[in-house]
Length: 515
Image 1: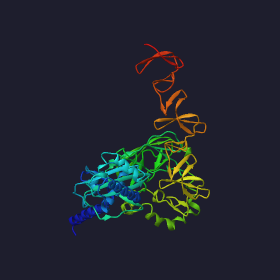
Image 2: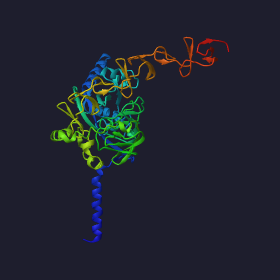
Image 3: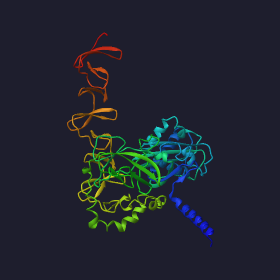
């Protein structure tokens, strides 16, 4: 074989190898932009979809309108759209300049048909409330009452505590007509999107305890790492700052700009080492997506490190290894075909044993992501996005009600809400200051001697309130309250308020006067 032929064959072999490895690279759209493909595990609420379908036809019957037929193809499209809404709440596509529904129905029997419409909604807890919200909207009502449509599909999914709805109405069938649907189903779907729909990284406050809030607070666990994984923001800013939440390593990599300030693992969890502000940069299969500010407010001495080291050496390792590994690949994230292959090559620097989010509860005990049994007693522990209580035997159960200074509903920490007269702050912690004013939303409350809060009315600490609203630049009950809301005190003077002149004493007493 001559040298020229050898060189040619080497080039061919190089090309073949490069092509083979290209499966690890992000897909490139026709526009030249990178497309991200991520799995999202949601709970598909078929019972709620059925309730809505029944109510929809009931209302149509009352109005003398023909009944909708439930279509299997439209049901599938609606469930996929609902999963997409968890990442980006909008009618626009995340991969083209078209509408999201137009892209989704490509290749289906209704690809080129007219008379297809969708309604979307976030937050409705019942079929009745979803119907009412859409019916009261002039832009959404036609899908409910129009005679232009004959078939429909209803998508309802729950993701990280929020519920996304989608109604697709069509003049033509997309699949087989079905009698109904029922039950719930945990399902993993693949979402495709341009990087810009993941680019709104939130400001992260890594701390154990603070009243200050901006972006997202992430609380330090016993191992020194934040309990929460990385949370991308919704680029549409229409969905309460929601967006995709990283649940498994291998899809993204994270880089700290200052390892002396904080470390970051394969899930985007932060381990603060000192006080300060830094940047975490997010990559998708080598492509830079975004960055987020990380504010570390914990003193280095507050980071607890001893808890991970005592556990591995005694008896914990033998227990999980025979049973955990096969269960984890099937249960936490169904449809592993989208992600298992990239993991080994996409993130070679990650140690899968410590970063894998394959947590499992077996016989009441929680086996952590590193395979070790959780042994801390009488403590809170976060498992797969929800909070559990480890009792005196370290057995875990999902949190409901008050635990310590926090309040939970089905494992979800309640934040920025008043429950049983106590205010649980934006960081979830119960407000404990006494005999003070506290602002909740846009209104002011009074925290009494037991820290119970009540909407402010009347005078409180040199301020005056009407149904929680601070009165500013007004004369109330004969006293002048300034532009900052505080009752005036100082040198006597004349002031003009809303075209009227007042004489104000040094103690804030105000009386009408001429100029």
